[in-house]
Image 1 (cartoon, rainbow, N blue to C red):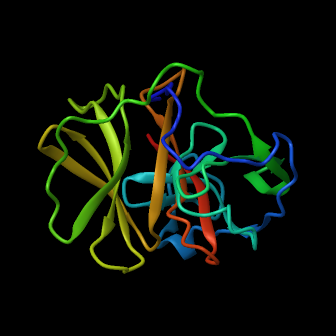
Image 2: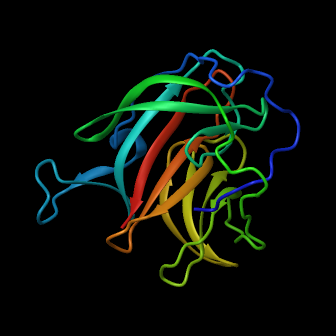
Length: 215
């Protein structure tokens, strides 16, 4: 995971740490993300949940009337709003199939240790019809060192998840939502990477929050 940042440029969050923030959630299904279940040896019915080259782990659609809960650009655990400067901690309720809902949320401390900045790629690929949104580094797979998200030009609800190294890239999945941030965590027992995404977060709009696995 690309970690650690020095602090963010203004605006800074004026709310006290721990202040409750009203955030509700509803399940975000594999079908809503353009994926499907595939019959795969060893997988019980209905099969393996896949979106192109990624496996679906869990997904929620978040909603809040708090104007601070918008315009997300970082998600190392807590999620960060670039417009309000606030970090939001989301308490997740887990069930058999992953995160089931958000049980509580609040203003949080920075998701990074003080004094460091998250890595940013020096070069990103040019992908026709899309613009670069965010990336996380320290990937070591198939010759790629970064994984990122590109949003469709304009306001279309569409994004791509892309593994890349400089100008060389591979599109892993196309999603029917706009994304604002990505964080990756390598699996300890395989070559897989667990990828957490949060949506772009337009004010007043639902925000996708999900985990997919590059296996």
